[in-house]
Length: 196
Image 1 (cartoon, rainbow, N blue to C red):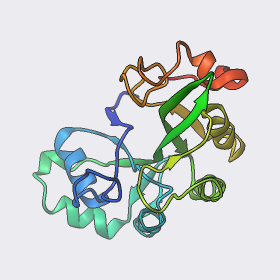
Image 2 (tube, rainbow, N blue to C red):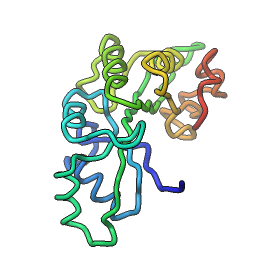
Image 3 (cartoon, rainbow, N blue to C red):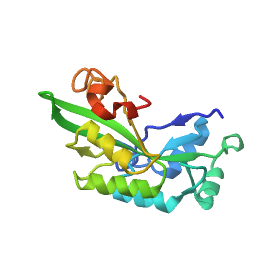
């Protein structure tokens, strides 16, 4: 099956984003642009997670859709040719800042979860490390390898993907605050990184 996806998204709860970044607007614009799967972004943010749980229902394994009444309301605002189903993946971007090998590392990571039970486990673990409610993209003092371990331990189908790896700042392979290899960044768990 072939489809277009946007798997790195933020919500209205992230800094420097639109107040219109809600599920309804994401779905409407995904329909207009031909995007079939959209990440939710920011699932660790308590207010956004509550909204996700209220508005999304399970679709295919690992994917969600908007409740019928929300989908129907959005469809009425779209041209007939744009009324295609949109699926959502539960996703969050985590910013980690920490010292390793005598350098300050600033790395962004994307974590994907198959269901809300996994989301809740990840959020609970991360809330013990730092403030996940102040920004949709939380900033944590946590080694990249340890964040990957938390994602993997949260459930069998959760995974982590390094975000925008070539960006000089905030990237696993970034020239200013990253590493020279995925193995150097994620250590003994590097083989669990299957996408960049």
